[in-house]
Length: 108
Image 1 (spheres, rainbow, N blue to C red):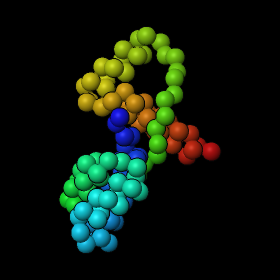
Image 2 (cartoon, one colour):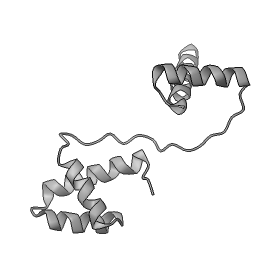
Image 3 (spheres, rainbow, N blue to C red):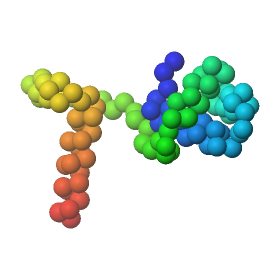
């Protein structure tokens, strides 16, 4: 099962803290596995990745599915734009909505 980006960031930050507090790697692995309810192998991977971090990983908002209906032509344009810019559809829509909502806030 894949972990969402929010949980991954939280686990990496936890691993980073453990590496700073716990002297022996096997102890950090056991603690990480217990704290996060993951296998020791997964815990070791998080600790290994966290050992290369120079700062905590920013934790963003959790993303959930949100279904909308759009005209076929607009979906086609959206997919072409996403492919051209190498962004995901979610990222394109999120950026467009953020820009629109920010503009609306400035007018009021």
